[in-house]
Amino acid sequence: MARTRRTTVRLWRWRSNPLRRRVDVVEAWVLLGAWLFALVGGLIAGVAAAEVVSRSVDRQREERREVTAVLTENAPERSATRTVGGDRVWATVRWKTPDGTARTGEAQVRPEAEKGTRTTIWTDRHGTLMMKPLNEAEAVLQAVSAGLLAATGAGCVVWLAAWTVRVRLDGRRMRDWDAEWERADMRWGGRTG
Image (cartoon, rainbow, N blue to C red; front, side, top):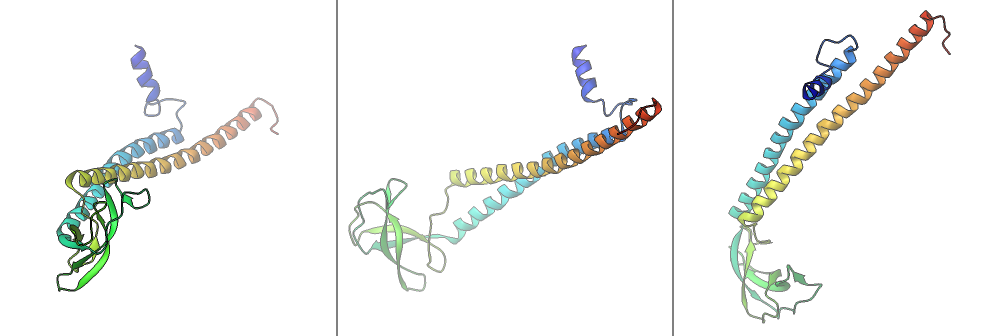
């Protein structure tokens, strides 16, 4: 019995009721629409964002290639300022582009590697130094994170719009309430302020 009563109270805007106003019915439809748009829109936005990130990672993997480079200087020791991820440091390396041009740049290498040591770097098809592409686990994490962020953002936008409509409906409800009290006061012989 208590469960049925609770459901009835929640759905009062949908039932025929002498206290139900047009504004209440509009609010019920706005809330239903907001739930549907937030769920469906969030799902679509999340899937789309995850797909875009996934395609971007796939494109990175296709465009980047491993190249052997040579250190032009001794790699520094591990230090707080030059360490990358704990097991790599930045050092200057030299490599050849696909057309045979020699280039130099900063890349991540093992700490304390000596000048002339060979290391692997990643370049694009023009020979420009790039970061290593994401591995499969990193790619999945990035796609899922982007999808969740997009879904949450889409849902928040829908709920913000619904909240704005509800605030306006509450204002309308209060104006109608004031007008009703004024009419009732006049019928009872009172004076309005």
